Image 1: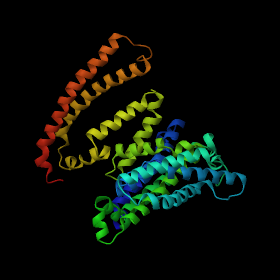
Image 2 (image 1 turned 120 degrees about the horizontal axis):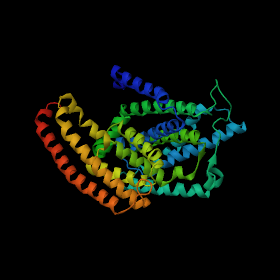
Image 3 (image 1 turned 180 degrees about the vertical axis):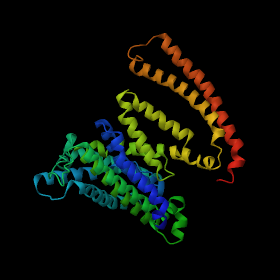
Amino acid sequence: MNDMFNKGRLVLWSFVALIFVVLPFIFSGGFSLSMLSQMGIMIIFVLSYNMLLGQTGLLSFGHAVYFGLGAFMTAHAINFVEAGTLGLPISLMPLIGGLTGLCFGLLLGFVTTRRPGTPFAMISLGIAEMVAASALMFTTFFGGEGGIVTNRTAGGAVWGVSYGPQIQVYYLIAVWCFLSMVLMFAITRTPLGRIANAVRDNPERAQFVGYNPTRVRWLMMSLAGFFAGIGGALATINYEIITAEALGLMASGNVVLMAFIGGIGQFWGPMIGAVLVTLLQSALSNFTQAWLLYFGLLFLLIILYSPGGISNLISIHVPVWRAGLIKKLLPSYGYALLTGFVTLLGVVGGIEMLYRGTLFGGINDGTTWVIAALLICVGGFFLKRAIGSVRRVWEDMSPDLARWV
């Protein structure tokens, strides 16, 4: 873990902490604070998922189980505080969610991690369905369709902090998000994190040198459940309500999309996905009801043209930057961006007219359809040529990049 605490990384982590502190001063509106809070929660959630997928090679379709169970247990704990039967401050409630996620990770992970690959994915899906169904059956704990309502100001103010104002909730989420990020990164530098990578890449060889792949998967599953539970607890504090949707396949699928869009090959990749997807869900949904379709198209484009996610696109440009060759890419990139924007205008225009029947508040005639079709055809034609131009530039740079890779 020495490289975790070297001077360069300490500077980087200090800069990250500074960003968390400064962001509310730049985006001070109520909507902005709410969105930043959601981003912090999702960053914890998606990084915990990447402990399974990116580091251990376990594709789970039920990771929201640990997020949701941690959230429900936290909701009951907050209500116990309000009733005077529990003396734990709200600031430490994420520990309740984390320990809940850890316990269920140990319990369920003992079963699910026995078989990796497709069996693990199917078992996790089955457990997710089972828990989601149970949420509607055991109403005493899960609250039925209405869920559990809480009051984040329960217990009164401590040192003037009541968590009534959203800014106070944001900083609580920011502190726990930062601590969780540091701890999850530290785990990647431990022997457990290293052997988890080995189990992901070649479990037979890891077993040959004396490690039990099943036990490694179980431990990583339990730790991932712990951090997912922290995210669920923070979601309960932020929204003051938790429903069965937090346990469902939609929540589990959402975190899978975040991880793949951001990129599972880098520790910071899923964070990009969490921020981008949350931004799309919170902001784009205010402009169009077809935002889920755009979300799906984005995911499709990422999988088709950049399977490594957005972080992979950034990583492959690092040697180009070091070699001082970035200027060679700018003309072809500009050409591709321009033609891509034209094509995107046509696609968006066509989708909005199909979905809402109108464009720009009431325009829907033959002319708008012709314009949209022309934008798609002309933009697509030149976009294909632009992509070819980008590829040729990369091929020409390959000899110069060889010594930098």
